[in-house]
View 1 (cartoon, one colour):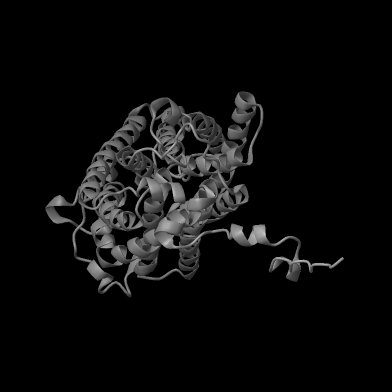
View 2 (spheres, rainbow, N blue to C red):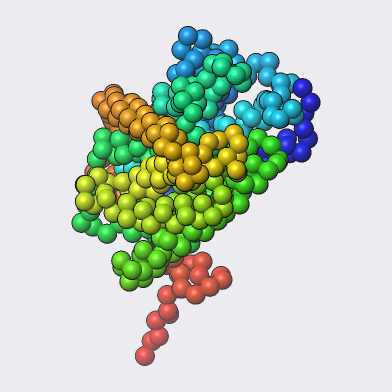
Length: 443
């Protein structure tokens, strides 16, 4: 099959963009954490890259995009383990193609960030070794099956496909697979691990808001590869996904700070950064199926709903440290369900018409099935995984380590050398060491 060099270049670029999102997430989460746990928070994202990247090559791609025989509706097989023989295979797309390994690498970055997203719910209090084991077990038992349900097909009319793909549920770039999946898993893990010491009575404010804004900016930048790259070609579908990713995020960021102003009396930098992420989450499943005006409507709804949803943890009593549930689970649900209202084949004839385009409630029903299936499966399996790991190796650090700070106790590092800052006053060489003591003057 002919390799399209333009599409291949776009997909290589998109893959790099999506990989950048995980370091961006590390800054976003790191800035929202307390100063004594910022390094651990960032390490949880970076180690997700290391662990999931290897697992994806060895068996993850095969389980997600392989043929599972009699079980192919639910999980793939091991026919492509280790990516053996895929070096010169092309992925079909409108008569052209990209090298199969480019698609493999692109999808690896999705698996990586999905795992990393979960970490924000359990900031400050999870053993690093337990997190490493959790990432491997969770991606194997939860991410790979759900991604297979939603995205796998053998490409033949009437052929084999994942059961949600076969149902006709739409998820262009990961509303169910990535965001609802990670959000509800974060809830399950947070419930097993328990609340931070002192929460919610003690203030646990973000320690570095510039980090949060930097992380949000990197996420937004990388998200263009996430959404537009999911077209697998440099064409009109990618263009639609690109503009919708831009404008829905603008709308959500605006809606969030308006809610803050009306509710709290001030619009905040944390609010606009959170609104950016909420808009990116919500537009992800819908980006190639709705019009730009529809994307604005979706973003406004998602930004407002998520701004209220992050407060649910105080009412319901679960400690979701960095609002993974309120932004990713709720935002993913909003985006997935709004496809049932806003989708139109005038934008993408590979989709379906939603309620507002004359398609009735059929598509909305399919979207609801996909949402519920993801919520139930991910929550139950994640809860079981967390319970077993807690029994076997313990998930939570000690109270003393939590009070001291997980950076110093788990990693033997601190993000900021406060001792040096206190010792020196001024700038340049004079700040490197304390001043010499004054000489005694004899009378």
